[in-house]
Image (cartoon, rainbow, N blue to C red; front, side, top):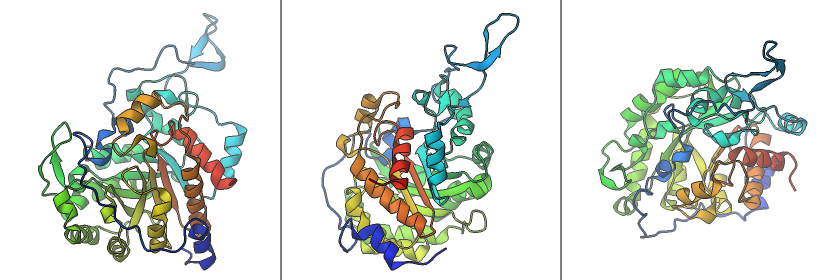
Length: 398
């Protein structure tokens, strides 16, 4: 990898924010409402499950006729079977060709029927897309990555990861979330309330056994970023942040290297409490060879206020998950789901976030480092459309 260039570092941050220390924490005593205190655990729309919406088969009304093919006996168009990609137009093909190969843009999961005409031809149910849609998704030239979020809810096996790997080309990359049994400090009831302390929180042995080993065995060289999303901590633990940093350091130090399996893969830490965002946190990540996952979520400061932390981590790869539009507030997943429906339209454009993110991605790639960026439907209303708009901003900034 190329080493730090002062010019590139200034280009990355200088015009957006003056030099400063990493983000200072903003304390709050407000407790989240029931069911919404586990980070993304309350966001079922971002799940990818082989059992989603059981019973949803391919819709017979789908535009499934093979173009130009006719059944000679009935004179009716032949119906195409399976999930087929929506052919990209010339502008999308040109846009993909203009993107640096270091840039890996993708969405959070892929099993959304409302992406008909954007990602795939015809109408398909969620269960069909969950099982068979990834191959079609990965054929779009702008889709160079995707986030596997379902592992947050239940650990996946090496064979499950291997099945995903077999559906995409060798140069495709996955961002994978670690199981919540490792990343949530609380054991939660079905309604999301914390019931008791989770003794497995940041457990090194469990992190290797339940996450690193099966991912490395199943995905191999298609690993992009392995993300430990740390759910909101109880207030008592927030008052003892040095202890939490020690836990994090011990876990990261125990993880096996990804280099031999996937040379450009990274381990990244995403948080939901701003109390983490300190120089001490940066020191732990740098000492252990991990990255900060830029979390674009209302529970954290806006992207501009997180840039000092990115500067402190420079140089190196970028990992970003654009999770939820700030207008919905820190517990707004349900509101976003209701408003955005089938995720077929960009309903709440956020050009400021997009412009800053594009600048950071562009500078990272120009320095020779990979940029792994995944976008949720809840960011602006439709992840595929957000991805295209972000790509345009990277290639041709306003």
